[in-house]
Image (cartoon, rainbow, N blue to C red; front, side, top):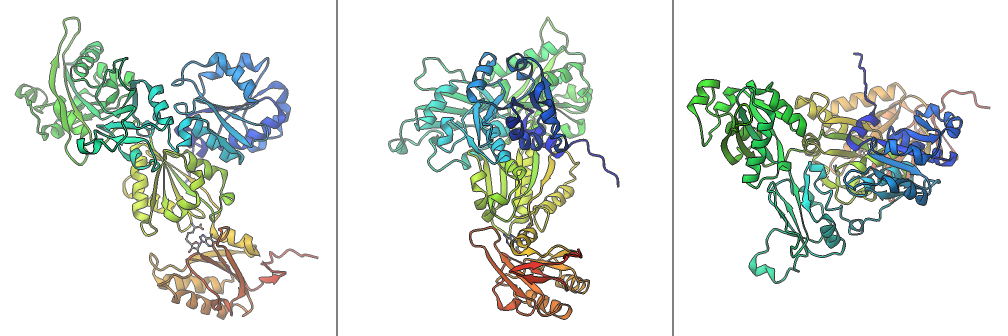
Length: 639
Ligand code: SAH
């Protein structure tokens, strides 16, 4: 099968994180930024005089854009076209350059500044909403530096209140965002009234977070400090009076599905008017609209299609047969005669909003006409239990290497730091803890729940989140990658939603080999001795074949507390085919604090402790031990 791929892994990641431009004005700055430019598919803007310098790096895949004249004159043309700008320049220079361009934190790009040596990545502005904090952390992973985040929430191990809803596609509503953020930064109590949307963010807060949930019971009120700010998370549109006693803000999860029926040729303006009127009358925020639902006959209705395009709303259409089956408060026999279902607006709203449980109507059928516009609109609104994120999810299948952060690729670190959610086995989560960000959804599960981990990661990604599934070593070697892809396959995944990207890691056989010398210099294979998922007869047959064929062999999962026989059988097989003094390395917990390495022989290997954290490397017939190093000759004539 020939496969063509138009998207590079980096561009997959970008689709999720926004477009970045990097900027350097010196040869050192240019060189410093390269790992990030390559890993993130970010072009590098340089003055013309650095062009020759940059050409040295063409083989790395570096893309450059040159400018003549001054950077001050050049920058404005890139300010609005990129979401993220990374400068290798003095902070003072960057501040002066961007000062005239700054407009609003909701629309300005994220700005990160890196020192020439790449030791620090400073989130300069657009920290929360622009994503500069997250970007600075990713840049630091690529450069092997330290991210500098100065937002007050970071010290409290919290993400900003103005970004908590982002992964779930919530829309920021009105309110005093600065006031509420200041209260949180000052450690004051903040009341959260969440009437809709996911509460996942609540479950991943530090223990000393400042939030109080809902309205306190009268009896408990005395013990809680009085809230100094309030956060509403709701489809309701609230008007906050300027002189209010405390600062308030509102997030709008997109939970409202608008069922819409109309006469042929109804004006777009009438649809807009109808929506505004109904939302206003019921105090609903237009920002909380997930999308529009209708009858399949309306899929090409010009005004309706335009309405959805203008607002970025999905249009979900259902057949008369589907809609007919829905119980509605206001069925109509006239409608039934015309289109074959007694309800369009109410039935479509309920159908679009229902998941496992049928959704309830917030607004029953309303018919709206206006003398100035052609046509008529019928509207109903249902509320979904789960919000529509409007985002295409992404799955990173990440290998975290043997366990030491130093042995992990910058791409793997950046994926983990950048993801909305990280899913993995508890022990590995502890090993990578320094990479995790405040506000990230961290789901650590026990070792036996691989299938649940795969399903959970897919569920989050299908919903629209970017999810890093982590495995030790490489994610595709006796690990999660295959299971995730098989599960997607079983679900009929079509390849794009979510997008999936593997991020390789150093597997145990490589780590173990590096620790003991060069045992894998000739043909080798890996065999797992775990017979949980593979029948023992198959494993034994492969052991025999590998032993006979003189492969160097790496044994994974060699022995557990319950499974002790297998390693003895394996030893017996290799003893038949290899000299008794063939070197064997028992490498336990490579690159972790409790590492233990024993180099022994095929004959004596069972005299030493072997457990589930050990990789056993068995040499071939020519493998030797010299000065403490295991060496398998490649066949070079070495003098
Ligand atoms: N995906 C992992 C393998 C997981 S299977 C990888 O590519 O390395 C689990 C087995 O890997 C363990 O039983 C042990 O045999 C081996 N292993 C994992 N980490 C190891 C380490 N740090 N040192 C030695 N062996 C390790």
